[in-house]
Length: 523
Figure (tube, one colour):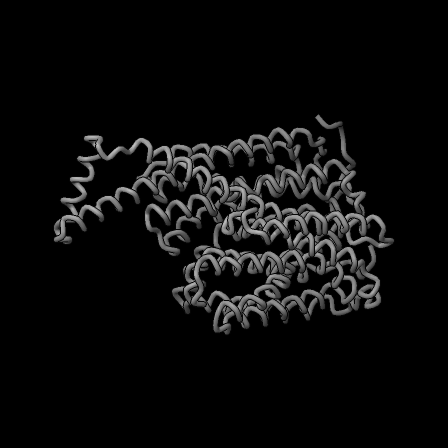
């Protein structure tokens, strides 16, 4: 390892700082879309672009981490990303409306997506197996998972402190502090500016265009009725074609952005697949359950944040154990345990009832937090096992792209499943609801009498009662659809456990020794 590759602990700590706060603030914005949309005078359907374009920016920014790290030096590249993040955060905070915010949101995503990945760049380029890499990967696993538990609480605090604009003014301050710290690290590392010109820009353009088209299509597909909207179909086709050309460009390039030979390493390919599959179960406590609490119990963002703190605390507590199990035991055991905890949490939620609140979901939050730590840490060990320095960029880029794409696909798939099952349950409940049924008549009579105290017109009172009954059926249909989603997530976790045992055995790595080669054969 050359001296230019080594990074002091301070530089790694700065990278960790950026990874943690950028992940938390990105989640905080996602949790606060109702408030952001209202502040920008945008309908919910249009405000969804606020998140979609941020994800598009992340696709564009992820490959730039390694390109800029080589060309400018890692410290300067981190500082550039930090300043860019701070400026675009401030720009979004100053935006007068949604139209003014959306272009800035793309660039904000470019820099925001880069910050967490600099942590992995530091680990992969500075640390070696048995010489701090396992500890560095555990820290990266923490930065990649901790946002799920704390983002809603941070969002609630910022909204209370300064409204929706505080969701971007405060990150701007953090980004500026990060940039200043980064500019004072690795000062002697100048980089090689000529590598910017020689980088595989054609593959970068094709890859980001193809993946970007797919991200937009999957993010907006459910809201736009999928193939019924022409441009969703066009984006899906363009994404598939763009990826095909990107693969050809990568194979033809003399210095490819991604070395396709990395997919021949079984540990890497299987770990990427398991990591993508796990993005679905993570949504149990971070998206599906909060959606239920908001719709049926009327929870505010502050109440959601309080309930989700358990996830973050459980993740923090479990990371040391996950590191120990992964470093000194067969990593398939903690990986299977983490997936099993996720499956258990999903199965508990299949008993969803109308009176469920945060107390009933707390154990699910604990299982999700511990499961995250036990899955991501060993998955990272498998992803980097046997990776040579020449494949470091490919490994880091593909792993982080898979996490982003896994999240987008899981969210789109769950949204579609819930919407379709809710329609089906609504139809079935509607068929069973016959107004001539005496029981239904008694319910309507009771509801009419209840609203009769404040609605004098009998016809109007009857209409209010029928609307109330329809709302009750809608909530019931939604709850049944969520139960179907929980069953699907439990099954997905169990399938991932099966795939885990197709991974090979990795021998324990004693401290201070290089990681041994793979032992045994795939089981």
